[in-house]
Every structure is written in C-alpha cells, then in structure tokens.
Amino acid sequence: MSKRLTRAEVPVELTWNLSDLFPTTQDWEASLSAVEAYLPAVTRFKGRLAEGPAVLLECLEAREALREQYIRVYTYADLKVSADGSDPANQAAAARAASVGAKVSAALSFIPSELLALPEGTLDRYLSEEPRLEPYRKYLTDLADQKPHTLSPETEEALAALEEIHDAPYMIYNRAKNADMTFEPIRDENGQELPVSFTLYEDKYEQEPDVRLRRAAFDSFARGLKRYQHTCAATFATEVQKNVVLARLRGYRSAEEMLLQPQQVSLEAYHNQLDIIQAELAPHMRRYARLRQRVLGLDEVRFCDLKSPLDPAYSPATTFAAGSKLIIEALSVMGEEYIQVIRRALTERWVDLADNIGKTNGAFCASPYGVHPYILITWHDTLRSVFVLAHELGHAGHFALNQPVQRLINTRPSSFFIEAPSTLNELLLGNYILSRSSDVRMRRWVIGQMLGTYYHNFVTHLLEGELQRRIYRLAEAGTPITASTLSETKGAILEEFWGDTVTIDEGARLTWMRQPHYYMGLYPYTYSAGLTVATAVARAIREEGQPAVDRWLRTLKAGGTLRPLDLIRLAGVDMSTPEPLHQAVAYVGSLVDQLESAF
Image (cartoon, rainbow, N blue to C red; front, side, top):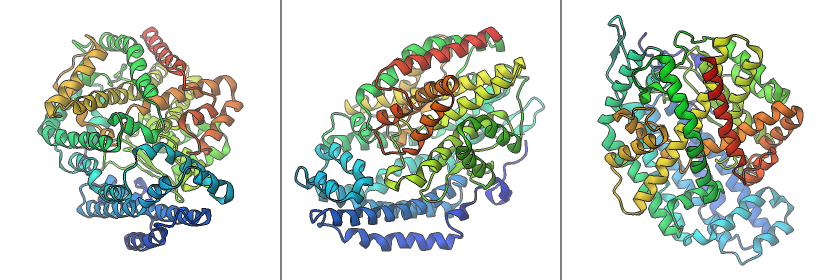
C-alpha cells in the first residue's frame, strides 16, 4: 500500500472545485467581512416588526439575503477543513466562519422574539394583507410551536451569541478525529507494514476479506480509539449536558422533546422508529450473523466481522468513469431533469474523490443555496464506492431540484425525511444491477450491498439513536456521563440486539467514538425513517412506474414547504402508522432469505 498523499499532492481532478463558491481565498475573505458589514441591514428592523406587514417583509428578505451570503462563507470554510483538517489555515478559517456565524445568530435573534410577542392573530393579518409574505408562511406558522419555550429577547440574544460555544463539542470531536488520532500500523502476510487511519479502517479494512488482517486492523483501531476515550467522553458529555440544561431552561419535558421540535416529529413517532425496528429486525440480523459464521467458517463472529464480504474472493472493481455510467443508467428512471443534475455532479467536479492525510472519513453532501451541491467521499475503485456515491448524489439531486423553485427558507425539509432521497438511490442502483445480471456471485454481492444499506441505517445509525435515548435519560437522572458509562451502555445495546450471535468486545463497546452524529441533535435515528420511506417509494416505482416517479419528483421539489408527515404523504407513503416500518423490516428479512438460499 502506498503512502497516503498530502492534500497538496492530490491531483486536481480528484478534488472538488471550490472556485464555484469563491474564485480565490481573497474573495472568501472579502465575503466574510461583507457578512458582518451587512448585519445593520437586518438589525435596523429591531423593535419595528409591529409596524406592519411591509416592514416584516423587508426584514425577512434582508435576513434571507444575509443567511444566503453566510451559508456560502461557512460552506467554503467547512469544505476546506473537511478536505484537510490537519492544515492550520483551514482550522483557522473554519473557526473564523463559526465566530461570524455566532454574531449573525445573535443579531438575528430579535426576529423570532418580536414575532412571538405580537398580539394573537397579528401574523395571520400580516399574511392576508401582504401576499409577498406567502413564501414565509410556514416559517411564521411554525414559530407558534416555539412560543411556549421562547425566553426573553435578551436571553435569546445571549444564547445565540454563544452559538460558537454550543457547537464546540462537534468541532472538538472532529478536530481530535481528523487531526490528532493516530493508530498503530499493522503487517500483511508478507510482513509489509500497512498504515491504519480512521478513513482507511472504515472505508477499507472493515470490508477486508482476510480475517486475520481485518481483525488486526480492528484491534489497532480500537487501541487508538481507547487512547482518546476520556477526552471524547468529556466532549460527548458536554454535548448532552448542554441540551439537558437548555431543555430545562426552555421548559421542555426532556431534551429529546426539545431536539425533536425542529424536526416536527412527535415523541411517539420517534419511539416507534427505535422500538419497532429493533424488536422486529433483531431476529433477521441474528440469522444474518449466523449465516456469516457458517459461510466464512469463523470461530466466532466478532463485531469487526459484520461488514466483511460473504464471498471474500469476489470484489467487483470499477473505475469512477464506469461507476458514473452505471449510476446514470440506474437512475434514468427518474427522468432527464434529474439525470442532468447527476451528470453535472459527476463531470463538473462537484465531488471530492481524494484520499489524503487530514481528510475526514465517511461521506457527505453540502448544498449551499444558489451554487450547487458538493460531495465528499473517498473513492476506492470498487463497486461499493459506486453505492456510496449514488447515496450522496441523492442528496445532491434533492437540493439541486428544489433550490431553483424554493426560497432559501423553504429548501430544507425535516431531518426525518432527509435521508430518503439518498437511500432511494442506493435501492434503485441495487435493483437495476439485479435486473440485468444473471451472474450468481454478482447477484449475491449486490444483495449483500443492499443489506449493507439497511445495516447502516437500521442497525448502525438506529443503535446510535438508542444510545442517545439511554444516555439522555441517564443524564437527566443525574448520572455522570463518562467513558465507562458510554462503553457499558453501548455494549449493552449491542448485546441485546445481537444476542449470542456476535461477540461484543472492547472495540465494539467503543463504537460510540466513531460518529459525529451525536453532536447533531437526534439525527441518528432519522436515517431509519428516511430508509423506511425509500423502501416504500422504491416498491411503488417498481410496481407503478411513472406515476410514482412523478410523485417523488414533486416531493423533492417541495423542499421544506411541508411538515415531514405531510411531505412524505405527498410521495404516497403514510408514516403516521407503523405499517411502512413493518413492511421495511419484512423486506430486510426477504433479503436475508435470498442470501441464505444463495449460500
């Protein structure tokens, strides 16, 4: 294995084109200064929102212009530090952008405070008197949900000014992971030394066919994590305690209730996702673990064996060009408008493919308003990378379609929905390959990949959600959140889910250290919600064809104009009942059935 490149050594064609955001760093600097300079254009309305609908319209339009400019500034800095978090200049730029963001939040905090202080019925009157306020209707209506939990204007401004501090746990975790954590190298069967990193472990070694090498990499990875467990636990605990305190200050019954409020999801729906999937999926996944042990001839199934290939000698390779062609073919059912977005993403450097020192692991899609989405992945010339890319292109397609037809304030739907477009693309890709391949090994591999999608969303992320649920309850009961607490709780969750089919060792218990999602509110469980929706939509597209596609495209373009259950209903799926959950878990069971028959 060759030495990992520095960012400066990466060929430009493997990187994203940030000049579409800002041609030069100097332009970014100027825009950062312009954001602060623009603040008075919004704050001049402070104390005036009771004057009438015309004043409110001017204020909201100025607010939106400021937010659009800041989003570009923040995205540029965030993409730079994600591509190379080891570069002090990138770290500094990200910190500066966050600092300006805190100023913006504090300066804008008067808007919701003043609007909520208006007499009952005033906002309805404003909306009826000024038609140009219509795009802001959902924003203004949704504010009513926050009224019982809104503090005094002075307190809200003070809390907004502390936004950078509130976001510190997320920043500290990522900084530790991307810039500080080191792992011992391992050796292959020939004695050659192989490096281990966060990205290499999660993107390569976790799927390594050689059991000895895979387990050696996991043990090195676990030892590296363990060295940072107390620092990461303190960071995790700070995030939890922050939300517990804020929930109490705002009068919520729990931190969970507070964190679900912006998602516009009920506690019942949240608990249904966690409870129903865990209970109904566990038997299927235990069958899957036993299948792995039998097919791979393992002495035991360790946690690090759960993503290894069932056919170790079969690993379909591809190139970025060939993978791009396959994605376009698979998604062509979505129509030309959608495919044009995908083509642009793949040919105009919307995607960062490089593997370099300091690059964050995993994959994501950022969608700054008025520019185009940016995708980060680490490309490995495997068909697995094609599935990851298809997932992120789902996010890109979603926002590239809704931004031209929606105001900034209405582009982003609830996170309860946000993973549906991405996971649907994975399912469409898998079904497309299966429909055109009679090769037994390829079909088994693809079914395994589709199971991997459900594992990622219904197991990995859902059990992250279960950890959050338990840790927040412990914190609210006054239990100190330490590394031991986190590892013991995570271990208990894994043992309950897998039963006696998987050995839960120390490395498995340290899984709480591996994801940034714990610093993003109650985000982890929403992956399961998105995939539940995607499962139903994929079935509808397969059975109905164009009518289902048309409903889906309308749903994507609707952006954030509807509450999540209404938005999902637009796609023809009713998530107000548990039926889509039962059907999705049953589908996972059918995939396990197919693999059992294939082996």
